[in-house]
Image (cartoon, rainbow, N blue to C red; front, side, top):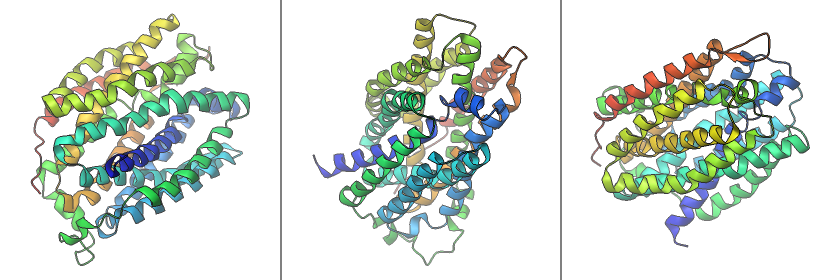
Length: 397
């Protein structure tokens, strides 16, 4: 295994645990709402607390992201993330869990920025979408392996157990960060060292319309998908007829498909163009967005078909989009910019979850109402991304 593949493997493992830690909250939704006796709005706070703190800390991290070795920051952030995840396992009340989720999100937001900054620095643009596809396959593995196993462990033992298992994985992955991630300091020799004023990253972004468009693309992408994602599991249980155990099938089938489609999407984006693949994926994704949010009681096999297509097309949107976003900034600014982008992503997804929580209500018979309005919002912002993406251009190093 060459150095580039070892690096990608470690980054994918980091993404796997980071994504699973975040995703496991969604299928645990029905269980947490029942055990803590909380409303859909309170559950949405659990989800959005992670993203809001991730966004806030990412903004602060942007001030120093390009002033230090990438590996040093990655190891510090991942250790903090692992400690936060283990702390979640010992939460005994809603408010303690809300606090520990916020702590985990604070480090998780930095991780997302660092992983994509490292990809942008280490992988040439002509191969970057392929690398992004491999990295995004970790999302699929989190769905096909992580979430079902997490749900099984939670059902067999308690909801605390998946967080303990993730914490144990985090300890092992930390060792490989030191073994397989090289020191990355080339960006320090390009003028973004400690001599620059501390707010330079924000000044540079504010003066660059291309970078502002890249951030706007991320905001609309999150509003175009994360409004519906947190309530998929609760909606399937309360309205469509799934049991909590059957939720596993949604993530198992969708994740299994995207293990194969994510690398393929990356290769297609490198071959036929990132904008073209992104546009086709966005347009096709509108169909499952509307079907999921309007679904009545439906046979399981039909639900699984729709949800699997949803997973595939959401990945088909994100892979070329992230490639375009990393290319919109020069390497000397990439760490700080990707930290700001991570902040924007987390805050936008947190706001999307919070917005959905305000719209979706629980009726007297236990069902969730108004979910279809959330679907219309997701479609609207998805369509806007088509116009923004066309205006983003690669930056010259």
